[in-house]
Length: 51
Image 1 (spheres, rainbow, N blue to C red):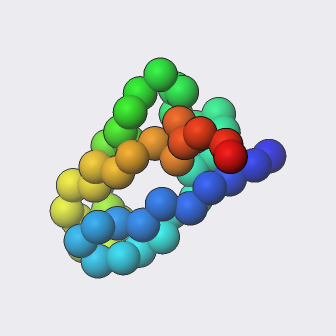
Image 2: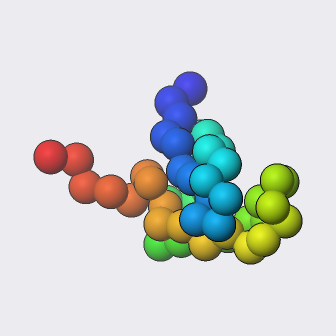
């Protein structure tokens, strides 16, 4: 399975996001950071255009 890394914008903790973990139609991923307990809203890395 392929993964892409996203970092918590609050504390920098890196999370791996799998290809099947999020719907590809969403623009942003929402979750709560396991380290700083702050909300995370980051761009869906699977929606990035390949160059």
